[in-house]
Image (cartoon, rainbow, N blue to C red; front, side, top):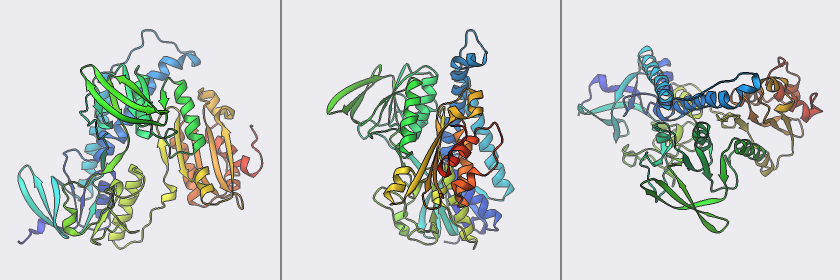
Length: 469
């Protein structure tokens, strides 16, 4: 079968999430003829449509309401008859999403990326069949990048209905605030969305299988963070194994084993946030020899090549943290590789952020990880209560923790619990990327008064002593 020249490309990217659309644009900028296939009408993938962006929009709206209700009076500001409109919050969220959807479409046109809407499946290593509303068409490419992302993992005995038992997707579109919400899983997604509804009046109870919340965080950050959230009214049951769940007319009943006993929890809504799994359904990867591991992740080498070297994979469908910015960097690196350029992703430099109040952000090794690697370390922890800007903001909870190598004080990890931690962590990323020591960082000018001075003071603590503690 001959393929029309219009259906022939140097590269076809499958998936238009943050990894896929960025890879497509970068490859086009580097001179390749590129198409991007996306089964949904809106571009942007999970992150833009049902993930990062809508959750942050709701976090911001609910934070404004919570601040006005509970903290504005600290600043001498009072309100009467304060209320919120959930429908308008959701409408604002959707307006933000739609504006970015249009923005990506504009970027595709600007960079001459051909957008194809439909479901892709491989016929051979250089051909895919795309099923659209109009029928099926065959497309040819020298190379492909798989960027199909991930989907929420359900409890095996309690599938999602997105009404009573909801995933993160359903949590972003509730039409009313539940009186009581159970969150199964106290990872990043769970605590963010649980915080949204707690601020709006829900009683939120977490059931976490492990012994601490957000377990990938440094232990001090995780435990300190939990104490702050508990003061905000969120309730946590740790080492809780959910063993059964069922819907009823009025809500959901969850059974969890805690300390050897079965406890029952009732709620209007149960948010299941126990993780995500790679999404490769329908691609027919077995036809082209693309191997996956036992968990379904596509196996790649350091250049993102699969077991079929003309096909690359990036983002959530390969091993590593499921983060939009990780997928973006992989997309750029994969595109540069295909265009003949050298490219590398520094995985140790990937920051992670929890967008609650306060925020939590981290990059590099935790204290325990450094110890497990046998590295002799020094650590420091500077509290925001000793930071003048945080005091002026009345946001004094949290700290900056630095993990450094003892022999030369090289920074190995930075962990921040506190106001605007997600913005502050970039300084730590730059410092680590440039192999800076705590001494180098402590001797760098920081404007006064700023939150970033807490990073400087924490760095000073490792080399000698902090000034303001």
